[in-house]
Each structure stands twice: as C-alpha cells, then as structure tokens.
Amino acid sequence: MRDIVGNIKALYNRGGMFLKLLYVNVAIYVVLNIFIGGLFQLDLINWFSFDSNLLSNINKPWSLFTYMFIHGGTRHILFNMLVLFFVGSMFEHYFGRKKVLSTYIIGGLAGALLFLITQNIFPLLINSGPSTLLGASASVMAIFVGLAAYKPNMEVAVFGVFNVKLYILALLYVGLDLLSVGNLDGVAHFAHLGGAAWGYYMGSQLKNDKDVSLWFDKAIDSLTGIFKRKPKMKVSYSNNPKPPRDDYEYNAKKQSDQQKLDAILDKIKVGGYEALSKKEKEFLNNF
Image 1: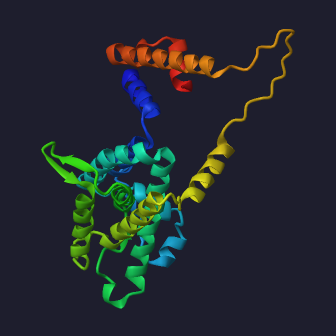
Image 2 (image 1 turned 45 degrees about the vertical axis):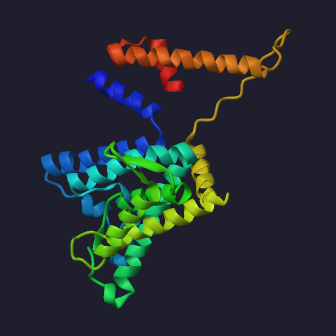
Image 3 (image 1 turned 30 degrees about the vertical axis):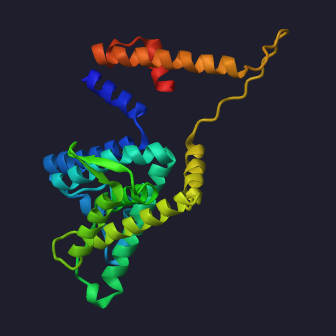
C-alpha cells in the first residue's frame, strides 16, 4: 500500500497541471460517488453542483467553482478526463501550467454564466436543459477550443490512424453541442458552449500576443504566495565569501540535479517508492 501511495505521490509531483486536474477530478469522484455515496448512502453531489435557480446558489456560493470538479457517472468523467489528458498535454506544451489552470477555471465560470442566462432570461430556452450543472465539460471544452484557436492547422492522429487538423475536431466537438441545444437529454449544452466561447477568445488573443487571462494568473500567484512558508532570514559571515555562481556553474548544477532525478525515477520503476533512501525521498519531494 505504501508503494502505491508513494508512486502516486511521485507521479503527481512530476506531472503537469493537466495531470493534477485529472487526479483531483478522479479523487473527488471516488470520494463522493463510491466512498460516501456507495458506503454511506449520502448524496452530497447536489451540495457542490451549480443550480439554474440563482437563489439556491446564494446558499452555496462555492458551487460556482466546485461544480466543475463533480461528475455524476462513470461515462461522464471518463470522457472528460480522456479529452483533458490528450488535449491538456499539448495545451500545456504551448502555454504552460498556469494557463492550463486559468483556462480550466475561467472556462468553467463562463459555462456556468451562460447556463444561468439561458435557463432564466431567454423564455424559449427555459427548461431546455437540466436544472443542475456539474462536470468538467465546459472547462475541458475551453482548453480544447483554446488550443484549436491558437494552432488550428496542427494535425492530430485520431485512433493512431487518421491525421486530422485540430480545428476540424474542435468544430465537430462544438457542433455536436450546437445541434443538441434544446434536446431534453439531461446535458447542459449551453455550459459547454460558454466554455468554448472563452477558449476561442483566449486562444485567438494569445495568437495575437495578447494574454487576456494574465490577471487571473497573477491572482493565483498572489493567493498561493499567502500559504507558502516564508524562509527564515539567516545571516552568515565568512572571511572568504564565495563569489556568485556564473552561468557555467549554474548549468552544471542543473544538469547534475537532473541526472540524480532520472536515477531516482529509474529506481522507483524497479523497486517502488519505498526502495528510495531517506535522502533520495527528500530530494524528490523538494525537486
């Protein structure tokens, strides 16, 4: 059991932001649907889902954020996480970890906003969909369409056989929701379209060297900085102070650390996390 937990922790620490979001979604699904819902027969999903009734959401304001990490069924989470896994890695390659998180969150917020508007303001669209919103679909749609807007002609191997340009896949993905609007199929299609709208806007602006979500990235940096432990100030004196490292020394140190990390990861593959020494575990956790 320790080996399993250690390996999961190592993979989580090494993985990109898209993998971290995937792990969080799966962990929440297991806890809410299998552990709490299965063993204790408690339905807490509605407590974290976003409602079309604005007054209901006032009593649970956190649902505006939590809904995008909640899934009601295995097929629901499986599809979303597969898309996140394959598209998220490419997205993170071009834009980095921070942009994955900001696109996921803002895309989810855009989806919730359009869902709320269509369910309450437009008379012809009232009751055209579910009254409760849950799932990462809007967030994943934002990442997918954002990448397609930035790299429309990038080819993706579908089923490892057919090379299809990314913008065609994105059009098909969005088109299915457009065609399904108004269907009483229990799917919040307008939420998906809200996420797609934000993804297209964000990706097209990045293509023009304009980062419209930079404010969010800075806000997240400020928020996480509050919880980071500040190092204690330490004053030391030396008769022979060392000069600052030059680029050569820095690069050599970086290369040495990378070689040490590769050796530790190889060791985990063979003997598991528990095969590491105390110093190796500390190095891995601090890397």
